[in-house]
Each structure stands twice: as C-alpha cells, then as structure tokens.
Image (cartoon, rainbow, N blue to C red; front, side):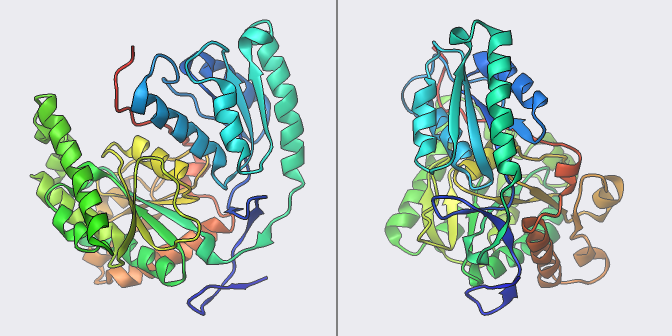
Length: 397
C-alpha cells in the first residue's frame, strides 16, 4: 500500500495508529519507573516480557519546582510518544513523583496504562510478579495490532549531533539538513536541539524564526545557558567543545556551532519549545527545542516531545541509541565509518572522498529514514542500545 505525501511524492509508510490519531513506527511496551527507587524493579519486569523496554533513571524524588516538573514532563512525554503502544508505570509508593501523576497524564493519549506499587505488592518479588503478569497481557494485546498506511507528514524527526569534528560541518550535518528539508517539504516535522552548541551562531537561527517574538524567545534560551555557566563560575570551553571535538580539530564553540546548525537545513523555524515540550500536531515544520549539548539527555527531550525517529550525526563516532525511537547514525568522517561500521548507518564522508553533494547523501538518508520508519532496524537497535537520560535543571534536596 502506498500513501501520498503533501509534496505529491508517493511514499510507503506503515505504522501503528494510536487512539489519539498519531502514528507509531514502533510498537513498544514501556515499563516506566517513576523514580530511581523503582528503576531496578522496572528493569526486572521488562526482562521477563519479550518486547518490553524499561527506562531506568536516577531521578523522581526530592526534586522541587521547575526541576520536578521537567522530570515529570519527560516521563509523561516518553509514555505518550507514538512509538509506545502501552505503558506500565512502576512506583515505590512514597517518592516525590507519584505514579498517578504520571499515569493519568499518559492516559490522555488514550493508550493502555497500568500501575504497580512496590510498597503495596509486598516488596520487590511481589511487584515483579504482578508487574510481569500485567505486562505480559499488554504485550499479547500489542502483538496482534496490525500496521496501517499513514502520511509521511505525520513523521516527527529529531536532529542530533555528537562527537563532532570538522567533517560534521562539511559533510554530515549538511547531508542531514538536506534530508530534514525534504521531510518538511512533504509536510513533516523536524526538531533542532542542543542549545549550548548554537552559541556563537544563534543570530543565524534567530533570523530564520518566522516571527520576531519567536526569535527573541530562542535567543533568550541561548543567553540562559550562557548566564548559567557564569553563575556557576565555569568556563564552557572545558566541555564545549569537548576534548574529543578538540582532538578532532574543532577549536572553539563558534566553530562547532556553525557546523551544528547545518542539521536544520534551510527551512524556517516555526516553533520554539522548552525541553520535552510536545510539538504542535497541527503545526508542521522545523522546531527548535531547548536541550543540553549532552547527547543522551538531548535525544530524550526530543523523544518526549514526540519524535518517532532520530538522525544523529557524528564525526568521531558513537554507539548511542534510544529506548523507543530508532536512531540512524550518520558520519561525515570516512575513517570513522571504516572503524565503526557496527555503529554507523550511513557514510556521508563520500562528500569528501567521492565528490558527492550533501543533496546526494541527503537523498540516501531520506530513503533510509523511510525504510526505518517502515520497520528496518538501525544498527543501534540491532546492538540493543537504549540510552536514556533526563536533563536536570535543579538540585536534589
């Protein structure tokens, strides 16, 4: 079966239709711990049920204010992601983030959500037994769901880069930018991220925002990161660019940022989001999300915001994946591709070695994205990479 994108190019995308009208390209059963106290139990439940995936983390208790809300929003966003078909929330029972706070918000997406509480199940073993029973029933129900055709305009793409070197700005990122532009031309959505890695190039992104107010909001996010580093009395140059970036040939944050922005292609910015904030399902195009430069936390924020798939460029190489969204790895460095073929899906270094254009490689990346959306596994998925991390913006009390 084929479907027609808004740009009149025939695409074949098959996925799982959710009750709220969104479409998943995977059908995960998510075992979601509300805190570090229930993370181990959640992992043990997931290990007993084929196809289940847990997201252990170090948060969920003794957090306050905006930091507490950001953790809640991230967990809820992960549960609401279209690639998740059902959710089992696992709680200790007395932690700061209570299970129903998370479960009730995920239920707004109309997918099956259940909870188990360690303190009410008689401890770890009782909770594992009850949780595995519930999860097994959910898994059986998910296993009989059939894929249906859906328009490519329903796809939300997250854009990430990590372990950058000069080839990222020359080959990898421009190629991904071309693929992102193609998706947006067909009515889809992309998310640019990593606020720290736009320092020195923020004026170029602000100029692409469709309104002055939006550009001002974006610029304020960049300034917020700069002000935070000053508040802590630290020099960002110790971590941005990273030691690996510097060893690869990037010497300043401005050099890194000027390469990073190419992931976003040439499309205008139509929305500016806080970390883990959901994209507007009625407003398609390029968004910016305020995430850190740390890859795992950044990807987590975009997936919580609704991204079903990630394009991740790397110069130095990285194995990173995600628990619920396939991550397609692209390198602009042909040497990295030769050394890390187990991890890298596409060699954009042919822009350098074979005279290919970013548009040529961008078309290949787009085709790979379509294939992965239809079920082809990425190398990160094959190797079982499920990295997960939540961006903290406050202290633990």
